[in-house]
Every structure is written in C-alpha cells, then in structure tokens.
Image (cartoon, rainbow, N blue to C red; front, side, top):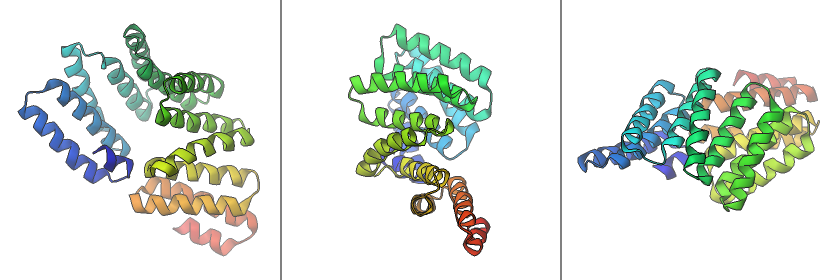
Length: 258
C-alpha cells in the first residue's frame, strides 16, 4: 500500500490498505487496525476525499485513545492536517497544540519533527512565512540529527516554498534541488511532480522560460500518469503564462485550453 501511494496509484493503495484492515480486524489486532485506518486516511486525503479521510483518521485516533498508544500525538497531528484542508485553522491549531504536548511528553523526536512541520504548514496557509520557516527549520534540524532523509527532504521542499513566497528565488531553488535529488533517486512520483511544478514557477519568475517549460512539462507528464488533475491544471495554467510571456500565443492558448 505504501509503495502504491508513493507511486501515485491511489486505487491500488486503497485495495491493499483495505485488505490490511480486514486482516487486522480478523486478528482482533487493535493497534494494527489503527495503523491501517491511518494509512487509509492518508490515501483519501491524497485523493481529495476529505470526509472519508476524516472518518478513518477519527477511527485511528479513538482506537489509540482507548489503547493509550504513544502514537496518539500523531493522530492529533493528522486531524489538524485535515482541518487545514477544510480551512478551519482554529481547530487545526487546537489539534496541533495537543499533538505537540503529547509528543514532547513521550520524548518522541521523530513525531515532534512531523508536528513542527504541520505547524509550519498552518502558518504557511495563513501567509505567515516567517513563522512557517521557523517551524520548518526546527523540523529539519531534528530530522537531520535523526538521519531521517525522507523527513528532511520534505522539510527542504517546505522551506523552499517559504523562500519562494518571499521572492528569495536563489534560496528557493537550492532547497528544491536538495529535495529533487532524493525524490528522483527513490522515484517518489507524488512528490516529484510537485517539485517539478514549483521549479517551473520559479524559473518563470526569474525570466528563464526554457527551464520553466522543461520542468512544467515534466510535472504534467507525471501528473497525467498519476491522474492528478488538479496539479495538471496548475502546471498547464503556468505553462500558458510562460508561452504568453514569450509572445507564443498559439501555444499559450493550447496550454490554457488543455
């Protein structure tokens, strides 16, 4: 299931995680059930099916509350992430504070990094890039100490996004390239297409159209393969802008119509 979701194959991921949940229920393995529910929540979130994601997230949280499981802080963090998607920043903040309290109490450095990352996303969504960058940097510091490469890579992407919004394009590119190196090596399609799209945006802003077109087309190629229509639309829209800035209105129109 994890391999499938990292390859952008959401339907296949759902199939395997649902089978995992069924087996866990047959075994009366509540901890395993909570883990499977959490993974199902992630898949539905990736598919923009927020109500289903919220339902499975709550199931995981309730089971872990009953068990007193040390991963409960992460369940609150996941719930906060979904509240951000719903646009309910007050509830997101409340759940992140609960998550922060629990992971610090459990002395859980790995999940503390995840919570800092999510708090950074909350600030980012509210256009507070200074506080977002501070929290992403805290997460990166922890992940580097833990030698958690995939966590640090996500932090690089988030830090790059903050620099982009502050129009610090050199720093933004440097951090995206760090992320890109790992995602290409591991072939994590879901992240690759977003980084390609982001780099296309940066090169458009710095008036480097050839590089912008190169990365936007790579993003579109992966988005098509993964049937990620929302990202495909974003990339085509930006590609249209790049062509229009060059005076290539036929290509701009075609990209916009697509």
